[in-house]
Image 1 (cartoon, rainbow, N blue to C red):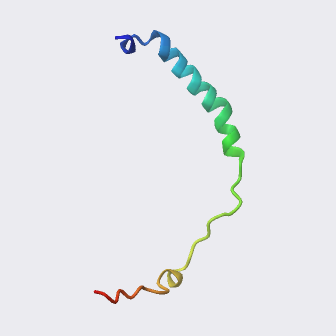
Image 2: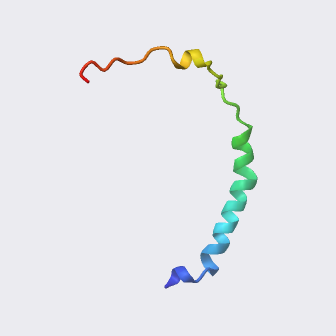
Length: 55
């Protein structure tokens, strides 16, 4: 079975992950998100509960 011989694909896998983690990840992590999440107070969480009239 060719999958059990790691010579052809293992080097390619390690090389591609090295390139990905060295070049692509730092570029992706530089981006900033436009809207920062804010914490809501507990009063906002309990504002309106649904009334299930059929129960």
